[in-house]
Length: 290
Image 1: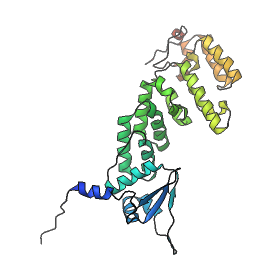
Image 2: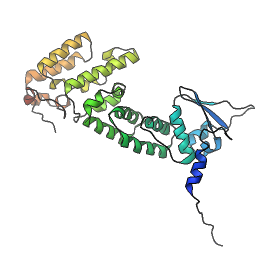
Image 3: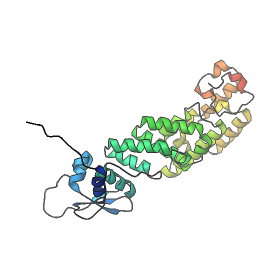
Image 4: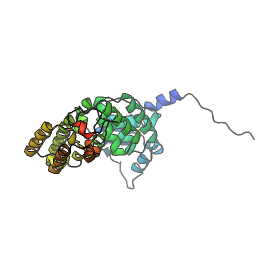
């Protein structure tokens, strides 16, 4: 007996028909209330459940009579959630620069690996100064190594501009640590100290904690020995007025100046970055950028 063969019709009409059901009340049997704006979104239980294990668990039938209430998903923005639904219904999605990271976050949280890969590919293509720190934070939060590497490389090449963005000020301490440990940042250490102070001030205001406490996990990566004596004195004075850097860290930088020996100063705290401006005492460090 001849075995049946699977043949395919045109995909586009099928995809178009399913796309028309996205957020369509017609025949819908599940209602979501989404995002801080509490937007109402309609969907079809069987389609979501067969496409995504997260929704299969979320929408499993509950015992008892009555009409089920809406499913509240307050943490995902409505635009991102609708993009997730579009992908689940059609296996394709329209992505936008301003919302791709929110869609990526939802894809990771819902376990949608194919959508995650589409978002990662798109995010890398549209990466720019305004987006890169936000993308780095998402990469660090969810352990997205390739995206993290691309973001760090982009910031290394556009350091001055990236440090002035709101996304930089909103980085977590682990994300900022990755940047401060880089030798390839195209920024001088004096500017990096100012950026770290601004970052800590924002965190202190949000968390209602002292600036020095917020800064503690990251300031050890600032290379104070690269600063000239006058700069170090000014930093020391400002540190008295607004503590940011542990006193012993400043003392270590002064020791480096006093010894004027590269052997005593070897290590990351004295290694020049790509953007380090030359200063007279750097010749004693004997540590050219590599």
